[in-house]
Length: 244
Image (tube, rainbow, N blue to C red):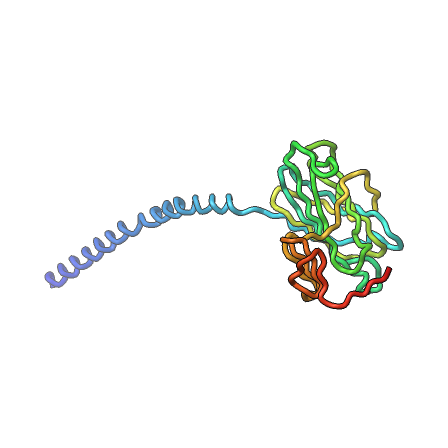
């Protein structure tokens, strides 16, 4: 009996020692793991902070700003630094309330600021260009940017556009990078003097229109009608009818 009891006691003691060793080995691991994760996660978190940016992406509506007649509308105010920053404002919709194809249009406005020490087009520290798509020629067909102060370093621009009647609740979108903000207005207002934006469409490469019916070469400046290889300023492959 004593022999059996002694063997049992020794086995229990050995078991306790074994468990104690295991606990001694394993127990520090959480602390080591915690330090490891801190060491690894710190630079990862820092990298994430440095490379991620909160961007401006605002969507608003026209708020029935024009009803029975054409008018100037103040869209809002763009706060943007003078350091070569850029922003895009796109207007979607049109004017008129009959849902006709001729009443639809889309206007995209691209704005870029100067370097904070010089003036650009028209003696303003900003330049902008806009394009219009669709058949409605009266929708946002005049756009004006008004800086909050004169000189080379304004901090914001009021954005105005002239448009036809009944623009309804079409919408617009303002996009840019972090550090730029937009304040919605969309009310009728006559703008003071400011930077008048050109509405134009330019391509810097060869241009094809209507399935190659009209072709313009960027290299030579030649234009072809019915041909993709114009060898003169105007080359026509077909019959020409002209009226004086």
